[in-house]
Length: 277
Image (cartoon, rainbow, N blue to C red; front, side, top):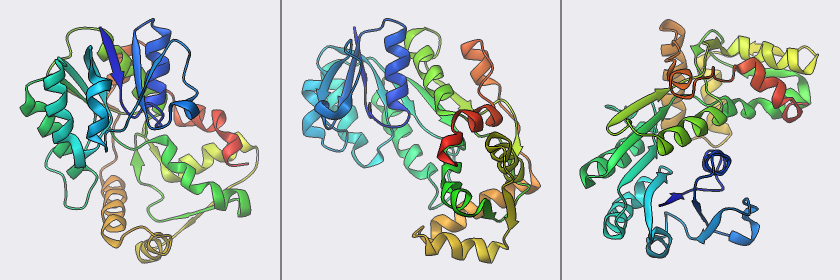
């Protein structure tokens, strides 16, 4: 039966579509603007959006499995409509902080999505990545202009993951059995500090990029001046402080499930070097 990919033109959802198409699976992609989606010709395109539940009944017809992008605001509507349509399995993108999340963290929304899907009685699997390698695109402007990154906590050691690896796990879980009731915490294959990430970008560019260490107060001001709400800035900085004192370690789940090692940050920097040039 058909697999519905929601958020099909988003950062992860678009890659999930590609993985499923490559495997020869029947895919229906939910997108706001089918004309501009530029999806593979094998894909059935459905016009709609999780945030507009009235668009979902038609998209859910004949669907057995849904890859669910995380949208807490309307997840109750989604689960009601999906149950009515006969959906059996839901593979939901969540986050590593979904259990007992701190106030104002992204984990609050992930916990809402997981609870709704779990309590609706689907055969569920939750994919819980931590930091994305793509997050460091936020450094692109100052690297391009000045060849410098300004951040606090340079030695915060995390295990960021490439979006390609999240999509590969999602497709594997959708297309194989044995994953019902699993909460897969996903990470990159290695732990790496912020300072080492900047060094990897430097190596990819073939030019030095300096790391200018900020105090926590300076970093907080930099982020809030850029429009990040103060409570979110505090949560993010608390995270970097935590991983400075308690370095993260890889979970190994990507390799365990896909049979191949995940993308390293150094490989990601090479593949995405033009964003920083």
